[in-house]
Length: 89
Image (cartoon, rainbow, N blue to C red):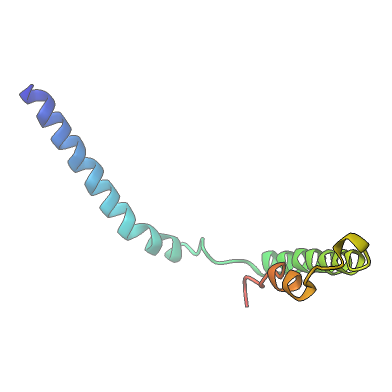
């Protein structure tokens, strides 16, 4: 029983130290290696995708405004809740 207690104590210590060391150094390491930076190509691609989505959203809302079953919809709220903010601005 003493052996099991010692194994669990050492295992818990290793897990704790691993979490503390990884938790404090991972962010700094990723920043140093510049892994967290976004390339210009990725930003342009995201901008294009966002414009496609927002254009599709605007066309869909415009067509749904003419639907007689949706006459009571508050379209200002629909536009407010379906807006996607630009992630890099």
